[in-house]
Amino acid sequence: MGDVGEYWRDVRHHRKSEQQEKSPHNAKPAIESPQPDSSNHRCYDWMIVSGTHSYARDRSWFSDYRPIDLFTREGMRVEGIGDVHIKVKLSPESDETGTNIFIIGGGAIGCSIAYFLTRHAFYNREVHSITILEASKIAAGSSGKSGGLLADWATPKCLAPLSFRTHGELAKRHGGDKIWGHRYVHCAEVSLEAHELDSGGTQSSSKDMNGGSPPALDWIYADSIKSYEEIGTPSNSAQVNSYLYTTNIAKLAEEQGTKVIIGHATRISYSQDMKSINSLTYSSHGETMDLEATDVVIAAGPWTTHIFPRAALLTPRGHSIVVKPSADLSNHVLFTNIEPAPNSTVKDLISPEIYPRPPDTLHNFDTVYSSGPDDYDVPLPASVGEVEVDDRRCEDVWNALGSVSQQIKDGQVITRQACYKPQIRQHEDNEEVGPMIGPTGITGLWLATGHDEWGMQNSAGTGLVMSEMIFDGTAHSADCESLDPRHFLRAK
Image 1 (spheres, rainbow, N blue to C red):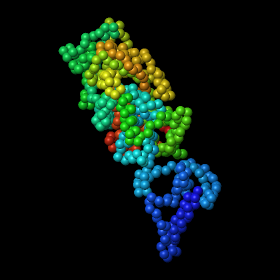
Image 2 (image 1 turned 90 degrees about the vertical axis):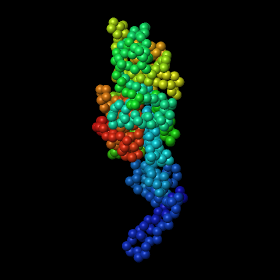
Image 3 (image 1 turned 60 degrees about the horizontal axis):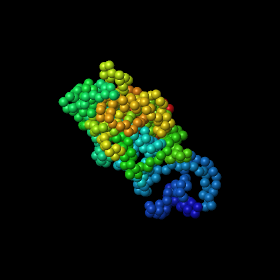
Image 4 (image 1 turned 135 degrees about the vertical axis):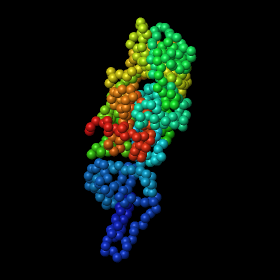
């Protein structure tokens, strides 16, 4: 405690000098206290004694406070004890203050936000702490189970073109074509007639393609194709392996200082007036931890409502399969409408989306990702680890694929899976509804959720504009006013 006595003598001397300087009765200017060099400069209002125990002079600095009445051995009176939240400067000459930014959710949105925060011009890993808090593992939810379509023509129009370009730039910068399967594709809406599952159709060739479909689509039965309408080209459409994009963008963020904590966010603590955040609480392996936070970004997808109930979301469930086909397929993403042939015994076929994928670091062979329609039959479980797969729905996807393609029918299903998406409300195709991106009206609390079917597509753009909002105070790369969460949140 000797430092306290020395400190207190310096304080008294400093204040006495200030009083002499201000006194109108002094004929001579007061002698100023000697100023040591900046490396040994004392703050007369605040002194760090040891570890996290400190002395503060002003009661108003405390976020919580308990009065006490005692004197130190050096004669300094201590009137209370509590917590003070401090932004620490790099040096006395620096204007930079530290921030503790926590991102709840280790999906494509959260990991992209972390990536772009670490690439922002204002980011300094010695000053800014960035942490992803993920309840299970990176890309455990829909970010690891989506088709990975990227499209300039996606919604919302204020964000989709930026995000599409940004995905391309990321792939070019980090070798995404080899690491996470980024490639440019054709997209089409296709009307198909199903064949009996125990028989085949006519294999397509450049001579007998129907419905105006291209020769490269020779992996669809030629006599199945009734119409083909291209809605995207390699100039405005691409794809990624969603799991590989998310896990690798997280690694790139970690390389620049981002920390990943596996734990379940349980509570955000606010100031007494509910106008700002104070801390974030999470649980892991039976233990509960409190983390002081300057900023919390909720990017928890369909689980966002669990930590912030004002963000009302629907949570549709989707099933998908991944197939190893018997032959390589062209880069044509198909949105199908499959109908049974006249007098066919094939009934109740669904119309899945079909995404051929190139070899990547997950599979060294071509694959086909295909998903069926969403359903609202099963409520969102408490965690991603409790998501159940309905084998019947996966089998429906497999049967539909086998009715229109021999190469897929002769292949092998290697993955059956299900996931939930965050949806603001049900909507028509191409109707713009969200997502929610930006401030909540509570200082330090941000939302990035409600991306629905375009989560992977808009992940890069969301990461970029959120980094601008947090560090610059506003988004420069896109006009995101229509995505302001305050347009969608429930009343307090």
